[in-house]
Length: 281
Image 1 (cartoon, rainbow, N blue to C red):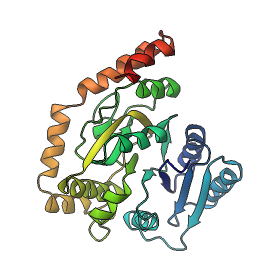
Image 2 (cartoon, rainbow, N blue to C red; image 1 turned 180 degrees about the horizontal axis):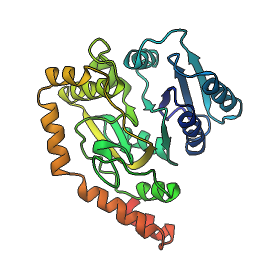
Image 3 (tube, rainbow, N blue to C red; image 1 turned 90 degrees about the vertical axis):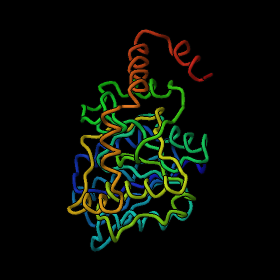
């Protein structure tokens, strides 16, 4: 599966969330996909045992590394990104649960438009990429297969997001390298470092897009470290007003409603009838 991005999974301390994430990753990702589980000395003994058991049975081409001492979230991710060179990657949160087709759809999103630098799938706790509601934390999809199929039936228009969102994000390697990667000196959290990277990419002419054909569930939203929001506001004074404007104006309302309609239609419509019009669009 060399045509798919490398999946980067920085581990956290929540063992139950990690167990669920690895199970979903295994079920939803094509066999042979390269996956890097990287532990910034966060996982405890049970978490390490979960990883080791998973590594023994996975169909994915997975590797696990663990640092002896933690260096912090954004620094650890930048270390991972640097090791990947100019390869396209998808960073997946350790408490996320990807739905079937997620990685293939994210790869297709990057391939459709060379100007897309970041591609973010839908998420029930996805902030600006949230579904069924914007800016709210909803329960994970009760019918994951239906939700994944409805997403796949969406016309791939890839509208603009204010910035990528950290539950899962595909990063184009060439764009990431040109922008200089994460600013680990200014931002401690992935949440803030990803926002800053997204805004720098946009300033260079790249796009931060929604991949409306993919869905990755999550139990909650990511968040900034202490001082990160102040640093973002100092560097990007228009960021918070822009984010507030996006949430109030809700430019993705019709897109979300279309996904809701497809989700409902899928229960009563044969798949060949449902998918044919959309895939031709």
